[in-house]
Image (tube, rainbow, N blue to C red; front, side, top):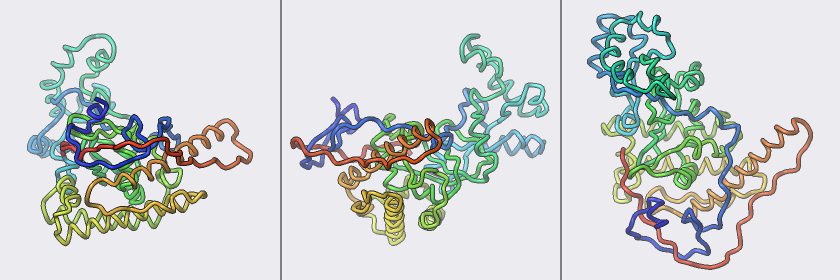
Length: 385
Protein backbone atom coordinates (compact mmCIF):
# COMPACT_ATOMS: atom_id res chain seq x y z
CA UNK A 1 0.00 0.00 0.00
CA UNK A 2 2.84 2.38 0.79
CA UNK A 3 4.46 1.71 -2.57
CA UNK A 4 1.16 2.33 -4.36
CA UNK A 5 0.62 5.57 -2.43
CA UNK A 6 4.01 6.80 -3.63
CA UNK A 7 2.86 6.32 -7.21
CA UNK A 8 5.48 3.68 -8.01
CA UNK A 9 3.04 1.29 -9.65
CA UNK A 10 2.25 -2.38 -9.24
CA UNK A 11 4.96 -3.95 -11.39
CA UNK A 12 8.53 -4.00 -10.12
CA UNK A 13 11.31 -4.71 -12.59
CA UNK A 14 14.41 -3.91 -10.55
CA UNK A 15 15.66 -5.14 -7.23
CA UNK A 16 18.84 -4.65 -5.27
CA UNK A 17 19.96 -5.25 -1.74
CA UNK A 18 20.13 -2.27 0.60
CA UNK A 19 21.00 -1.81 4.25
CA UNK A 20 17.81 -0.01 5.25
CA UNK A 21 14.60 1.42 3.81
CA UNK A 22 12.58 4.45 4.88
CA UNK A 23 9.06 5.80 4.34
CA UNK A 24 10.16 7.47 1.11
CA UNK A 25 11.29 4.02 -0.13
CA UNK A 26 14.92 5.12 -0.20
CA UNK A 27 17.88 3.20 1.18
CA UNK A 28 18.77 5.44 4.11
CA UNK A 29 17.31 6.10 7.53
CA UNK A 30 14.55 8.60 8.20
CA UNK A 31 15.43 12.27 8.01
CA UNK A 32 13.53 15.32 9.07
CA UNK A 33 11.90 17.17 6.20
CA UNK A 34 14.18 19.82 4.70
CA UNK A 35 13.56 23.41 5.78
CA UNK A 36 12.64 26.33 3.55
CA UNK A 37 15.56 28.68 2.92
CA UNK A 38 15.22 32.45 3.16
CA UNK A 39 17.61 32.89 0.23
CA UNK A 40 15.15 31.10 -2.07
CA UNK A 41 12.09 33.11 -1.07
CA UNK A 42 10.12 34.87 -3.84
CA UNK A 43 12.21 33.33 -6.63
CA UNK A 44 9.92 30.45 -7.68
CA UNK A 45 6.33 31.59 -8.15
CA UNK A 46 3.17 30.14 -9.68
CA UNK A 47 1.44 31.70 -12.67
CA UNK A 48 -1.95 33.38 -12.75
CA UNK A 49 -5.21 31.75 -11.67
CA UNK A 50 -7.84 33.00 -14.14
CA UNK A 51 -11.06 31.40 -12.87
CA UNK A 52 -12.80 31.69 -16.18
CA UNK A 53 -11.99 30.29 -19.63
CA UNK A 54 -13.62 33.40 -21.06
CA UNK A 55 -10.38 35.32 -20.54
CA UNK A 56 -8.63 33.11 -23.09
CA UNK A 57 -8.50 34.06 -26.78
CA UNK A 58 -7.42 32.15 -29.85
CA UNK A 59 -4.58 33.66 -31.89
CA UNK A 60 -7.12 34.63 -34.55
CA UNK A 61 -9.33 36.45 -32.04
CA UNK A 62 -6.33 38.28 -30.57
CA UNK A 63 -5.08 39.28 -34.01
CA UNK A 64 -8.53 40.55 -34.99
CA UNK A 65 -8.85 42.75 -31.90
CA UNK A 66 -5.36 44.19 -32.08
CA UNK A 67 -5.64 44.63 -35.83
CA UNK A 68 -8.75 46.79 -35.51
CA UNK A 69 -7.70 48.56 -32.31
CA UNK A 70 -3.90 48.48 -31.80
CA UNK A 71 -4.17 50.19 -28.42
CA UNK A 72 -5.93 47.09 -27.05
CA UNK A 73 -2.70 45.18 -27.52
CA UNK A 74 -1.79 46.55 -24.11
CA UNK A 75 -4.23 44.12 -22.48
CA UNK A 76 -4.16 41.27 -25.03
CA UNK A 77 -1.15 39.22 -24.07
CA UNK A 78 0.34 35.79 -24.93
CA UNK A 79 -0.76 33.12 -22.44
CA UNK A 80 1.84 30.42 -21.74
CA UNK A 81 0.60 27.09 -20.35
CA UNK A 82 2.49 23.97 -19.29
CA UNK A 83 1.73 22.15 -22.54
CA UNK A 84 3.36 24.97 -24.55
CA UNK A 85 6.59 24.53 -22.59
CA UNK A 86 6.54 20.78 -23.05
CA UNK A 87 5.39 20.42 -26.66
CA UNK A 88 6.18 23.54 -28.67
CA UNK A 89 9.68 23.45 -30.23
CA UNK A 90 10.21 27.11 -29.23
CA UNK A 91 8.14 27.13 -26.02
CA UNK A 92 5.79 29.72 -27.54
CA UNK A 93 2.34 30.52 -26.21
CA UNK A 94 -0.40 28.87 -28.28
CA UNK A 95 -3.14 31.28 -27.17
CA UNK A 96 -3.74 34.75 -25.75
CA UNK A 97 -5.56 36.20 -22.78
CA UNK A 98 -7.35 39.41 -21.79
CA UNK A 99 -5.28 40.71 -18.91
CA UNK A 100 -6.46 43.81 -17.04
CA UNK A 101 -4.05 43.20 -14.21
CA UNK A 102 -5.11 45.24 -11.17
CA UNK A 103 -6.91 47.93 -13.18
CA UNK A 104 -10.08 49.43 -11.77
CA UNK A 105 -13.24 48.95 -13.83
CA UNK A 106 -13.23 52.49 -15.17
CA UNK A 107 -9.69 52.01 -16.48
CA UNK A 108 -10.48 48.62 -17.98
CA UNK A 109 -13.40 50.17 -19.88
CA UNK A 110 -10.87 52.15 -21.91
CA UNK A 111 -10.38 48.89 -23.86
CA UNK A 112 -13.93 48.32 -25.17
CA UNK A 113 -13.37 45.25 -27.34
CA UNK A 114 -11.54 43.34 -24.62
CA UNK A 115 -14.12 44.46 -22.07
CA UNK A 116 -17.00 43.30 -24.25
CA UNK A 117 -15.51 39.81 -24.42
CA UNK A 118 -15.31 39.60 -20.62
CA UNK A 119 -18.81 41.01 -20.24
CA UNK A 120 -20.09 38.16 -22.37
CA UNK A 121 -17.83 35.27 -21.32
CA UNK A 122 -16.70 35.92 -17.74
CA UNK A 123 -19.13 38.22 -15.94
CA UNK A 124 -22.18 35.90 -16.01
CA UNK A 125 -20.30 33.08 -14.28
CA UNK A 126 -18.62 35.40 -11.78
CA UNK A 127 -21.97 36.94 -10.78
CA UNK A 128 -23.27 33.49 -9.89
CA UNK A 129 -20.57 33.11 -7.25
CA UNK A 130 -21.26 33.40 -3.54
CA UNK A 131 -21.03 36.74 -1.78
CA UNK A 132 -18.82 35.38 0.99
CA UNK A 133 -15.19 34.33 1.29
CA UNK A 134 -12.89 34.38 -1.72
CA UNK A 135 -15.90 34.19 -4.03
CA UNK A 136 -16.97 37.66 -2.95
CA UNK A 137 -13.81 39.32 -4.28
CA UNK A 138 -13.88 37.25 -7.49
CA UNK A 139 -17.49 38.27 -8.03
CA UNK A 140 -16.86 41.95 -7.31
CA UNK A 141 -13.74 42.20 -9.50
CA UNK A 142 -15.08 40.04 -12.29
CA UNK A 143 -12.88 41.64 -15.00
CA UNK A 144 -9.69 40.59 -13.18
CA UNK A 145 -8.07 37.20 -12.86
CA UNK A 146 -8.98 35.49 -9.59
CA UNK A 147 -5.28 35.78 -8.74
CA UNK A 148 -3.23 38.05 -11.02
CA UNK A 149 -0.03 37.21 -9.09
CA UNK A 150 1.06 40.75 -8.27
CA UNK A 151 4.28 39.56 -6.65
CA UNK A 152 5.24 37.60 -9.76
CA UNK A 153 4.67 40.67 -11.92
CA UNK A 154 6.80 42.72 -9.55
CA UNK A 155 9.63 40.20 -9.60
CA UNK A 156 9.64 40.04 -13.42
CA UNK A 157 9.16 43.77 -14.08
CA UNK A 158 12.86 44.49 -14.66
CA UNK A 159 13.71 41.28 -16.52
CA UNK A 160 13.35 40.40 -20.18
CA UNK A 161 13.54 36.65 -19.63
CA UNK A 162 12.89 34.11 -16.87
CA UNK A 163 13.08 30.36 -16.38
CA UNK A 164 9.92 28.22 -16.36
CA UNK A 165 8.79 24.63 -16.12
CA UNK A 166 5.40 22.87 -16.26
CA UNK A 167 3.99 22.06 -12.82
CA UNK A 168 3.07 18.57 -14.04
CA UNK A 169 5.28 16.78 -16.55
CA UNK A 170 6.97 13.51 -17.37
CA UNK A 171 10.49 14.93 -17.19
CA UNK A 172 12.18 17.96 -15.66
CA UNK A 173 11.63 20.49 -18.46
CA UNK A 174 13.27 23.83 -17.70
CA UNK A 175 13.08 26.54 -20.38
CA UNK A 176 13.96 30.20 -20.75
CA UNK A 177 11.17 32.42 -22.08
CA UNK A 178 10.23 36.10 -22.32
CA UNK A 179 8.53 37.90 -19.45
CA UNK A 180 6.13 39.85 -21.68
CA UNK A 181 3.48 37.12 -21.42
CA UNK A 182 0.98 35.87 -18.86
CA UNK A 183 1.84 32.57 -17.22
CA UNK A 184 -0.77 29.95 -16.41
CA UNK A 185 -1.16 28.61 -12.88
CA UNK A 186 0.18 25.34 -14.30
CA UNK A 187 3.57 26.99 -14.86
CA UNK A 188 6.27 27.48 -12.25
CA UNK A 189 8.13 30.73 -12.95
CA UNK A 190 11.65 31.30 -11.65
CA UNK A 191 12.48 34.99 -11.39
CA UNK A 192 16.03 34.46 -12.55
CA UNK A 193 17.61 34.83 -15.98
CA UNK A 194 21.05 33.22 -15.84
CA UNK A 195 22.15 30.07 -17.60
CA UNK A 196 23.91 29.13 -14.35
CA UNK A 197 20.51 28.84 -12.67
CA UNK A 198 19.26 26.91 -15.71
CA UNK A 199 22.19 24.49 -15.38
CA UNK A 200 21.41 23.79 -11.72
CA UNK A 201 17.63 23.51 -12.14
CA UNK A 202 17.89 21.26 -15.22
CA UNK A 203 20.63 19.11 -13.70
CA UNK A 204 20.10 15.63 -12.33
CA UNK A 205 21.21 16.95 -8.95
CA UNK A 206 18.05 19.05 -8.75
CA UNK A 207 16.00 16.31 -10.41
CA UNK A 208 16.94 13.83 -7.67
CA UNK A 209 15.70 16.33 -5.07
CA UNK A 210 12.48 16.97 -6.98
CA UNK A 211 11.63 13.30 -7.51
CA UNK A 212 12.10 12.67 -3.81
CA UNK A 213 10.04 15.59 -2.53
CA UNK A 214 7.38 16.16 -5.18
CA UNK A 215 3.99 14.51 -5.31
CA UNK A 216 2.29 12.84 -8.25
CA UNK A 217 -0.81 14.06 -10.06
CA UNK A 218 -2.39 11.32 -12.09
CA UNK A 219 0.55 9.93 -14.00
CA UNK A 220 2.56 13.12 -13.80
CA UNK A 221 5.24 14.42 -11.46
CA UNK A 222 3.95 17.57 -9.77
CA UNK A 223 6.59 20.20 -9.06
CA UNK A 224 5.94 22.11 -5.85
CA UNK A 225 7.70 25.47 -5.58
CA UNK A 226 7.49 25.23 -1.78
CA UNK A 227 8.74 21.66 -1.37
CA UNK A 228 11.12 21.36 -4.31
CA UNK A 229 12.58 24.84 -4.74
CA UNK A 230 12.33 26.79 -1.50
CA UNK A 231 14.14 23.97 0.32
CA UNK A 232 16.74 23.37 -2.41
CA UNK A 233 20.27 24.58 -1.57
CA UNK A 234 22.01 25.99 -4.64
CA UNK A 235 25.82 25.75 -4.83
CA UNK A 236 25.96 29.35 -3.70
CA UNK A 237 23.45 30.68 -1.20
CA UNK A 238 21.74 33.05 -3.64
CA UNK A 239 20.02 31.24 -6.56
CA UNK A 240 20.72 34.33 -8.67
CA UNK A 241 24.48 34.29 -7.98
CA UNK A 242 26.75 34.48 -11.01
CA UNK A 243 28.82 31.41 -11.85
CA UNK A 244 30.64 31.70 -15.22
CA UNK A 245 31.51 28.00 -15.53
CA UNK A 246 27.89 26.98 -15.02
CA UNK A 247 26.74 29.74 -17.36
CA UNK A 248 28.90 28.28 -20.10
CA UNK A 249 27.81 24.65 -19.80
CA UNK A 250 24.19 25.66 -19.31
CA UNK A 251 24.28 27.78 -22.46
CA UNK A 252 25.90 24.98 -24.46
CA UNK A 253 23.14 22.52 -23.59
CA UNK A 254 20.37 25.10 -23.95
CA UNK A 255 21.51 26.21 -27.41
CA UNK A 256 22.10 22.68 -28.72
CA UNK A 257 18.74 21.54 -27.35
CA UNK A 258 16.95 24.52 -28.93
CA UNK A 259 18.61 23.87 -32.29
CA UNK A 260 17.61 20.20 -32.17
CA UNK A 261 13.97 20.96 -31.35
CA UNK A 262 13.74 23.57 -34.10
CA UNK A 263 15.25 21.23 -36.69
CA UNK A 264 13.11 18.26 -35.67
CA UNK A 265 9.91 20.19 -35.01
CA UNK A 266 9.54 18.52 -31.59
CA UNK A 267 9.17 19.79 -28.04
CA UNK A 268 11.02 19.16 -24.81
CA UNK A 269 9.07 16.03 -23.88
CA UNK A 270 9.89 14.26 -27.13
CA UNK A 271 13.49 15.42 -26.93
CA UNK A 272 13.95 14.00 -23.43
CA UNK A 273 12.09 10.81 -24.34
CA UNK A 274 14.72 10.27 -27.03
CA UNK A 275 17.62 11.30 -24.81
CA UNK A 276 16.60 8.82 -22.11
CA UNK A 277 16.00 5.97 -24.57
CA UNK A 278 19.23 3.96 -24.72
CA UNK A 279 18.20 2.54 -28.09
CA UNK A 280 17.95 6.00 -29.66
CA UNK A 281 21.44 6.50 -31.09
CA UNK A 282 20.99 9.46 -33.43
CA UNK A 283 24.25 11.51 -33.41
CA UNK A 284 22.52 14.72 -32.31
CA UNK A 285 20.83 12.91 -29.42
CA UNK A 286 24.18 11.45 -28.36
CA UNK A 287 25.57 14.99 -28.43
CA UNK A 288 22.75 16.25 -26.20
CA UNK A 289 23.36 13.41 -23.74
CA UNK A 290 27.06 14.26 -23.61
CA UNK A 291 26.30 17.94 -23.04
CA UNK A 292 23.83 17.06 -20.28
CA UNK A 293 26.35 14.80 -18.57
CA UNK A 294 28.99 17.55 -18.82
CA UNK A 295 26.55 20.03 -17.30
CA UNK A 296 25.70 17.61 -14.48
CA UNK A 297 29.41 17.12 -13.73
CA UNK A 298 29.91 20.90 -13.68
CA UNK A 299 27.06 21.28 -11.19
CA UNK A 300 28.58 18.61 -8.93
CA UNK A 301 31.97 20.39 -9.17
CA UNK A 302 30.26 23.65 -8.24
CA UNK A 303 28.96 22.06 -5.04
CA UNK A 304 32.40 20.59 -4.36
CA UNK A 305 33.96 24.06 -4.65
CA UNK A 306 31.83 25.46 -1.85
CA UNK A 307 31.90 22.30 0.29
CA UNK A 308 34.65 22.73 2.88
CA UNK A 309 34.15 19.19 4.15
CA UNK A 310 34.87 17.50 0.83
CA UNK A 311 31.54 15.67 0.91
CA UNK A 312 30.92 16.14 -2.83
CA UNK A 313 34.33 14.93 -4.02
CA UNK A 314 33.22 11.33 -4.39
CA UNK A 315 30.01 11.95 -6.34
CA UNK A 316 30.22 10.41 -9.81
CA UNK A 317 27.72 11.36 -12.53
CA UNK A 318 26.24 8.28 -14.28
CA UNK A 319 25.39 8.01 -18.00
CA UNK A 320 22.24 9.86 -19.02
CA UNK A 321 20.45 6.77 -20.32
CA UNK A 322 19.50 3.56 -18.59
CA UNK A 323 17.74 2.83 -15.33
CA UNK A 324 17.65 5.35 -12.52
CA UNK A 325 20.92 5.30 -10.62
CA UNK A 326 19.94 5.02 -6.97
CA UNK A 327 23.56 5.22 -5.82
CA UNK A 328 23.97 8.64 -7.45
CA UNK A 329 20.56 9.86 -6.31
CA UNK A 330 21.06 8.76 -2.71
CA UNK A 331 24.53 10.31 -2.59
CA UNK A 332 23.23 13.61 -3.93
CA UNK A 333 20.16 13.65 -1.70
CA UNK A 334 22.19 13.00 1.44
CA UNK A 335 24.53 15.87 0.67
CA UNK A 336 21.68 18.22 -0.19
CA UNK A 337 19.94 17.42 3.09
CA UNK A 338 23.14 18.22 4.97
CA UNK A 339 23.61 21.46 3.03
CA UNK A 340 19.99 22.44 3.58
CA UNK A 341 20.37 21.96 7.33
CA UNK A 342 23.61 23.93 7.42
CA UNK A 343 22.19 26.81 5.38
CA UNK A 344 19.03 26.98 7.48
CA UNK A 345 21.02 26.96 10.71
CA UNK A 346 23.12 29.84 9.40
CA UNK A 347 20.00 31.82 8.49
CA UNK A 348 18.56 31.30 11.95
CA UNK A 349 21.80 32.42 13.61
CA UNK A 350 22.06 35.44 11.29
CA UNK A 351 18.53 36.53 12.14
CA UNK A 352 19.17 36.18 15.87
CA UNK A 353 22.76 37.46 15.98
CA UNK A 354 23.53 39.72 13.02
CA UNK A 355 27.14 40.16 14.07
CA UNK A 356 29.86 37.95 15.49
CA UNK A 357 31.73 34.85 14.42
CA UNK A 358 30.13 31.42 14.28
CA UNK A 359 31.55 27.94 14.43
CA UNK A 360 31.22 25.95 11.18
CA UNK A 361 28.28 23.58 10.92
CA UNK A 362 28.98 19.88 11.27
CA UNK A 363 28.22 17.83 8.16
CA UNK A 364 25.74 14.97 8.07
CA UNK A 365 27.25 11.53 8.58
CA UNK A 366 26.12 8.42 6.75
CA UNK A 367 24.24 6.26 9.27
CA UNK A 368 25.61 2.83 10.10
CA UNK A 369 23.68 -0.05 8.54
CA UNK A 370 21.24 -1.78 10.85
CA UNK A 371 19.78 -4.47 8.67
CA UNK A 372 19.36 -5.56 5.08
CA UNK A 373 16.32 -5.94 2.85
CA UNK A 374 15.39 -6.06 -0.80
CA UNK A 375 14.26 -2.76 -2.31
CA UNK A 376 11.92 -2.97 -5.30
CA UNK A 377 11.40 0.02 -7.57
CA UNK A 378 9.48 0.44 -10.79
CA UNK A 379 10.38 2.18 -14.05
CA UNK A 380 9.22 5.76 -14.46
CA UNK A 381 5.45 5.81 -14.97
CA UNK A 382 3.96 7.41 -18.05
CA UNK A 383 3.19 11.07 -17.38
CA UNK A 384 1.56 13.93 -19.32
CA UNK A 385 3.54 16.30 -21.57
